[in-house]
Length: 177
Image (cartoon, rainbow, N blue to C red):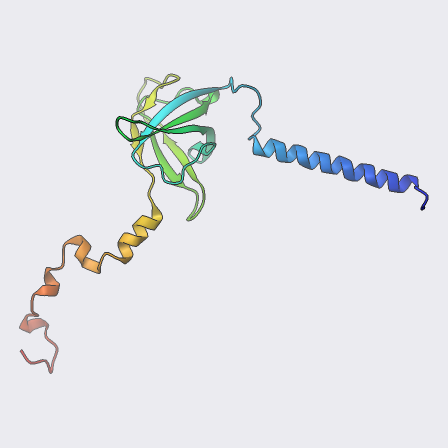
């Protein structure tokens, strides 16, 4: 058996400290640095006809700055709309009553998030209020499918030109009428 020296014991100890520190950083990153019962947050709700790939814990942003997160996504059994519960940081508790919410995508294939656009109403949203103005998510795959398989102008209703014979003005030379 090899004799353990102080350098080897120091290296093993340093490795363990670095491993524990990296686990702590990973734990902080996965919880978004939020501990406790969330006393510094207030709830708002918003109704959407389409939430796309939005998920719980998705960020809520104003002008690109994260101000909260999505707490829950439920379905209203009467209207069949998605009801999204937002948890907004108390620092931003002065959102005007005419604030609008939209579901956007970070980049082309990034994660979905809720973007808030504050309005100019002097009244503010109280905890538990509903955001009245919403914009649903855009499904990029469905949009691309409509474009690819629409048949060109047929989707826009301009297919009359395809069924009418060409007028003599537009015929090329060498064509017989």
